[in-house]
Image 1 (cartoon, rainbow, N blue to C red):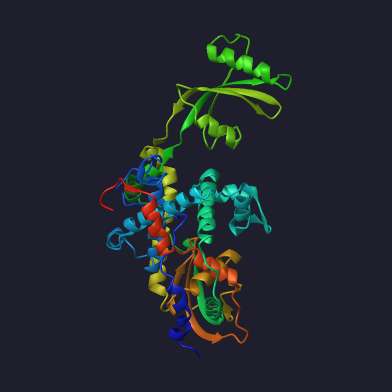
Image 2 (cartoon, rainbow, N blue to C red; image 1 turned 180 degrees about the horizontal axis):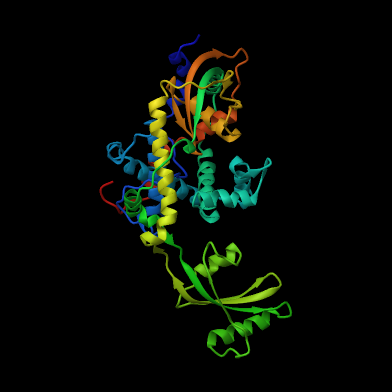
Length: 444
């Protein structure tokens, strides 16, 4: 039987590649130093690209969650400060902005087709093995993301990857063979699935209110737009619509013209995403939108009032906040349960599993099995527990290991992809000299 230390020698070549880029955030952890409701507030500027407080918060949150997983759920804000996570998060965004400035100088772009191909291949958005628009919208909504926010982030990530690819040398034979060796080990494990349903949380009004007070900026009434609408049927021409638009703008509209009143929000939007984006750009000084063709009719829009997003009161936010609070408490209790039981648990025993092929594990979906296998083969612990994106936790104990006779051969593009995510130090130094970096926040 191969020892655990021998098994993990396989990572030596990979870990000499030092720095990586953090892209999209996950979860929400805040240090409470800034107001993140104002998306326009900049904490830094790199070349022509501003970094917002919201971007900094998301990146910090993602970094905190990664460290928290390494510490098996015991990470706290004091430790985060000791590790300088705020500084790391800001540095990550500055590095991204440097690459984005470079992409702009080379006129590198991401087409809609490239973006769609990236999104449609993600298993989380598929139904019956194929990309499904309803599932896509539902998953993003459950994660408190709009389609526009998500696609903007994915487009940025793809743009950075495309730019870095230009500076990524071809993977060498030694690296490919080293990666092949890393993927040529099989583990037999004992495992047990823990789910949030296994823990119960008592009603705690004091705890809920404290949670809301700490996170109240996350519970907002979304901005709404009061509009006056004129619709012109399919008999109207473009010139007819323009004449009515001019009358509407001058205040000389015929009294017989029907002007309807509606209020729209990003969640209650009757128009196309493109038209809604134009509506959000209207102001009280420039409230009119020229005629737009919508289906078989022309539509003329006037902004009557903009109702900015406001923070909900405790009572207004209570149902939503309670759901999040319960979820956070269950996660904490589940981590505590895992910490107390991973050394002594009894569970199912798997067949030998390999990194290159997701196993079928009882109680886990295909996506969870893949995620668990990826994390297992990068863990340095023989016995422990791993937290999945779904919130489930898996206790595991590696019982036995063996080398495969026919080692999985890592293809060159896999090694190139790993290297493609790494920052070349000389490149970054050149970019820092080329694009001025201005930091607007203190204490990070």
